[in-house]
Length: 145
Image 1 (cartoon, rainbow, N blue to C red):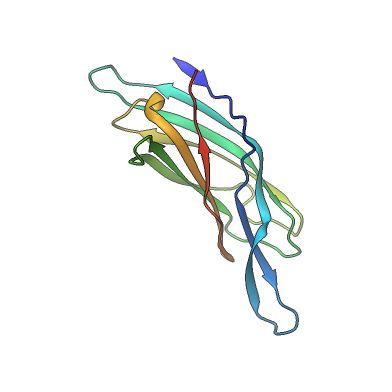
Image 2 (cartoon, one colour):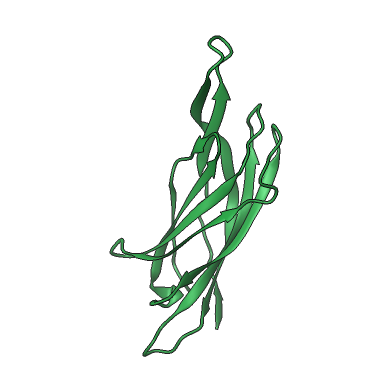
């Protein structure tokens, strides 16, 4: 049975890669690459009551406000239970994985929950990553209907 999740909080995961023209070095700044809007989150059960399993399908939009190109852009995801234990995780390359200055990219993946029902999940952590740096972890609380 598929269930959709209504997320009332805007998901923003922040990461940035900037250039310091006075020194010529690259500086990591944490405010210019965001995961925009509410992500698409759908839970799917695949197991039984005796042997629960399932997955959560997660997708979204990455929007760059940077004045430089980002390379190998991906998103790391962690699905957590209420007690903070890890239920599942995954990394997915964004499409496109190279983003021009001011460009955008999307991500879509299924995070497998091999030993738990998706309804056991209480939050998802999303972290954008590129060759230029790792972004700030953003946690989104889940409330399944």
